[in-house]
Structures are given as C-alpha cells and as structure tokens.
Image 1: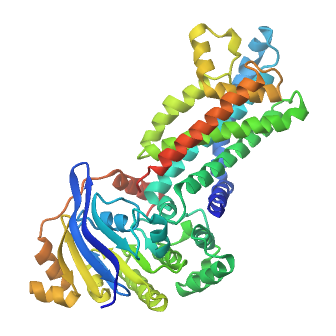
Image 2 (image 1 turned 30 degrees about the vertical axis):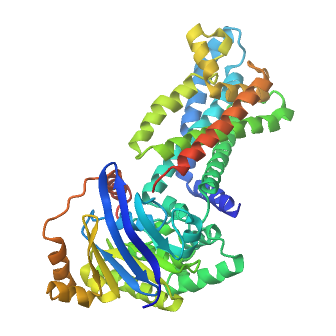
Image 3 (image 1 turned 180 degrees about the vertical axis):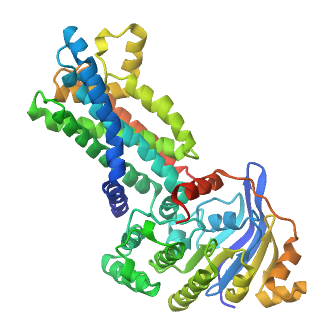
Length: 267
Length: 248
C-alpha cells in the first residue's frame, strides 16, 4: 500500500458538551477512492469540515497532504478541492466566471487558468453553456460545474460531501462517471460521503462506516460484506448501524434550506 | 491582492445584474425625498430655514447609502448558508482578504447607489451650493459607505438567519437614520434628542455631506472628518474580526 495522504488519529470534535466525532482514527492511501458512510448526524460532515480546515478539532492528530490543517491551513487548502453538500456556486455569475473566480482565489496563473477552465468545462459538457448564468442550471449541471471547479487548481485530494444527494439516478450515474474519469486522468485521491449504499459499493475502493461519532467498520466493500454476512453493502450498513431512524434536530441550515426551496424552488 | 480584487468585482457584477435590487432600493429614498421634501417644505420655509429640499437632499443621499450598505450584510448570511461563502473560506487566501474584498465591493455598490439618489435629488430640484466641493462630497459619501457596510458585515457575520436581520433594521438602521441630522436641523432639537443625534456617528456623515453639498457644517468639517474616519476604521476592523470568526 502507498503512503497515507489523509491520516486521522483519535480525532474528537465536541460542540457545547455534545460529542459529534468521538476518537476516530483512519488512513486514506494516496490514489484511492475512499467512501465515508454513515446515517444522518453520524459525524460525516463534521469530519470533512475538520479535514478541510473549516473546523478545528477538539482533540487528536490530523495530517492532510502532509500538513496539519490547524497549523498550516493555507498549505492544506491548496492541496484539496471540495464539493460541498449544499451548492456553493454564485448563481448570479456565469459558469466561466465562477471558474475564473476560483482560479484567481487559488492563484492559478492566467494562461494555465484559461487552459484548465476550457479543458474541464469541456470534460463535464458545460463548455457550450459557459456564458450562461448558473442560476439557470439544473442540479446535475451545477454539480458537474462544482466538480470541474474543485479540480481546477490540480488538487491532490478531492472531497465530496454527498455529491449526488437530491439528484435523480441517471444524473447520479453520470456524476460518478465524471468523477471517476477525472480522478483517473488527474490522479486525485477522492474522499466522499454518501448514504446511497449501492453507489459506495460500486465506486469506492475502501470504505469506513461512522455511527454516533465512532468508526464502526473499515475496509474494502467486499470485506465489509463478508464481515457482516450481508449480501449487499446496504445489508452490511444496517447490520453495523441498526434500524433506528436518526432525527437530527432542525438546525438554522435546515430552516434556510426550506426557505430556499420555497423562494427559489428546487433549482 | 488579486483575491480582494476578484471579490470586489463580484459584488459589482451582482449589483449591476440585479436591476430589481437597484430600483427597489431607490424606492425608499425617493419616497422620503418627495413626501418629506414637498410635504414639509412650506413649513420649513415659513420657519425661516430656507429651502427644505436643499437641506434634506444630503440626508436622503446618506439614507440611500446607509440602507444599501447595511443590507449587504444579508448577502453574507445568504452566501454563508448556501453557498458561495464556503467556497471562499476554504480557498488558500486569508479571511482578511475575503472580508476586505467583499466589504469594499459592497461599499462601492452603496456609493454608486448614493450617486443615483443624488441624481434623483437633482431631478427633484436640488442644486449643489458649490460645484467645486463635489469631490469632497464624494469623499464623505465613500466614508459613510465604508462605515455602514462594515456595520452590515459585522451583523451578517454574527447573525445565523435572515429573521435576525429584521432586528438590525429596526433597532440599528432606522434609529441611526432618524436620530441623525438627516431630516432636521440639530441646533433646534430638545436636549435628549440633540444628545442622541450628537452621539450618532451617521450625523457626522450627513453633516459633512451637507456641508459639501448645501454649504454650512453644523459640527465643523474637521470634526466630521475625524469622527467618520475613526469610526469607519474601527467598524471595519470589528467587521473583519467578526467575519474571521465565522465557522462555516
């Protein structure tokens, strides 16, 4: 196995006494597609936020692309690209302008920027639509654009937080094809979360299952199935995390999601 | 510095592409100018204070800047929950560059909006007393814009959702406007109100602008300039600090 590009040891995150991530340890070897699975509220997004310098861990050690996200945030940020759970494009700008803005923020030199933007937009099939406002794009097109944008500065790691949530099955398949194609071409390590088990099973080289802030299983999809005696990864997932349905308390973000849907529709 | 520029540019593009917003935020100042200017004008004149529109116009320009600037804070909340803010917060640039780009961009937008209100005032019959002092007026407008945008940045960084912004509107923006020297002459006011007006930083902005546009500083140009410059700097630093504390 090659060296780990992401390494977490005894990672803990507490919010006002509530433990969201409870002493988790894992390692992601360079070049793999790593699936991070778990029910709602299990700690997936909190973990991604710590890996991507957005949240500081309460305890534990982290290395991302050879740097400490707390001590060297800018070096870590340069090394990864991210597609967030919620869209993070500016709808009032065009696809090309969103790309351009990213390139400037990441200090991609002008000539390279132009070249990268064209190549990536062509790859995700949005080059013809580059001058259109993003607010006119469908959910799938936005995701494609976000993936293209996240790869523009040639990151070593691509984080995807539920990249296919809210998309129809055809679009989900297409998105994964783009991700796999791009990651093969660009030799990027992928760290993604999802709760579509069949997706994780098909796409991921390695999987970790997190529940109640703890990692309950880690290995290849086949090994996880074997370990739990399930036929599919979904069976394995339920064997590991139980049948109870998690009700996360509605946070401001959920209320905002609601408002956004009411105001803008599901655009 | 490129990051500051591209984020500044983004604010401008968003402004120029949103005609509805541009026109919508002109409504209030125009309403105030027409209703108060023409409604109270005769009474003001009879009190021996001269032309009310001449007096009011700088206050209305300030209002246009104030509302546009503070409301830019809403964009931070919106961007933060959905979107775009996260993209900038994980980029390899410092928070200071991000907040500077955004704030300067929004301040520029507020300044343009103030300029449009100024043109509307001209159309309503306002005439600058000393055309040569227009650059000075622009400088005061810019300082007001920076100060008010910084208030918006601070509010947008602290508040979790849009509902909270209603509070800012009712308990900060409207009092700032009404208890300033925008609508009425300060020396005539009763003690308590006069004190409130004198403690209100916006009064110094209005006074500076009125001095430059209509002639006659109530507090003196040096005082206006010092108070406004100092507060703009303090609020900008506060806004930047609060913004840097945002956890996405």
